[in-house]
Length: 361
Image (cartoon, rainbow, N blue to C red; front, side):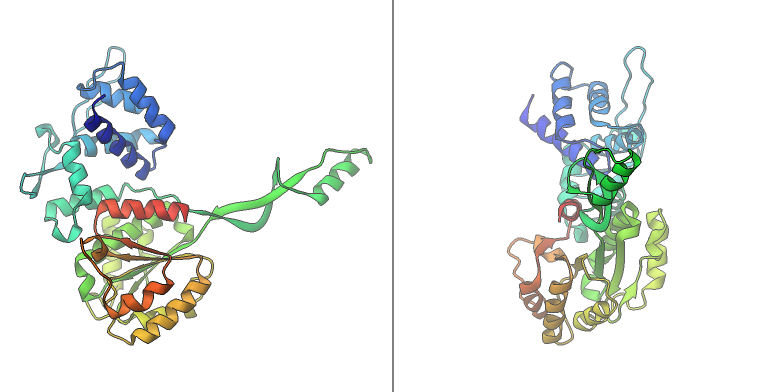
């Protein structure tokens, strides 16, 4: 199989995982083995080989169809004899050679896998309107997992510490005869993630996409996700982002934020945030370019407090994806010593990597 085809299909499997399909490494290898016996130039063969090997449950089928449509440009998959006909027709995005994008109907066979891969890595601040809509649509497919932590509650387990109470009760139930030793372990639960999204004027080109990423996280794990906007004041957006439709949620968020495109006082807002006790034991994600209009010394003190309370501190800076970037602003210099992960946040690929990082932090 050609190297470029392997790269394209590996990217397709990665897109499926981001959308919540169980396309793990073993299933991806099974797809490659299946395609070794099929015509890889035929869309139908690729479609059915992927569908039969990459999907782990019935719930994956609809997601698989949407991702296949988006990744391979809405091609029609003609069925083999005895199989149902699956026709994928959606409006997707094509890129011209100069990088400009426009929406076209699926019947025109738009957008190859390589073109969509290019779009995944483009800076969202430089996208056209149609390209931005396509990136937002692809982001809505993200089904980010969440790192697990041990809770205080115990559950029965085949291995683990001795569960003395259950073992004694089982022995008494048997009339005093010796019973097998029973074990227990701490129950696992998703770790809470708290996002602080800078909506100041300097972040205008990225704030909307960052909030849509926050919505994708909220949709995946609503009970352990909190979202705040920061600028000249701290605003809790969790309730507004609970709506499953991204556009409806963003309309509610836009109405709720009173300081959109204003200034930035990260130190003061972080101090208020820490007073609310949301950070303890959580993964705290701060999305900002670090332009601090307040006192950098105050921001440094609050970052020091945050690093002691949070499980992990992740700082997302859209400009970090720019070649040659150096964190020279006063806010970034003050915050850097207390950051566990300093990552980019300028493209769909960067957000996908961030989601994977949060799933394993």
